[in-house]
Image 1 (spheres, rainbow, N blue to C red):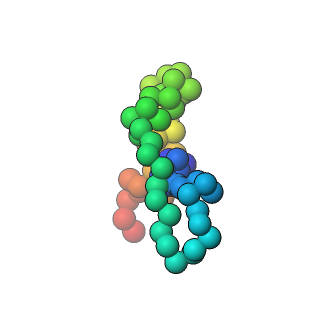
Image 2 (cartoon, rainbow, N blue to C red):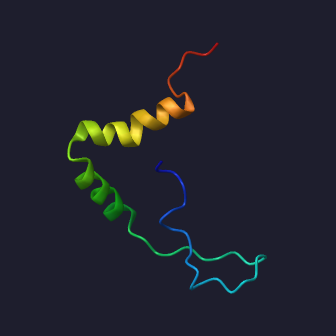
Length: 66
């Protein structure tokens, strides 16, 4: 699911063992990651399913209020 902090999470190389200290994010190019995902998806319809339809179904977006 696209929505976690991956791939921006820190790496074990940045961790000093202090759990009270926030580990810095890695610098990642989000546009490049989305472009890579689009190349794997092969079609706009599949990319729509991955990035829009599946999360909407999982979280109930677009359902009528009860």
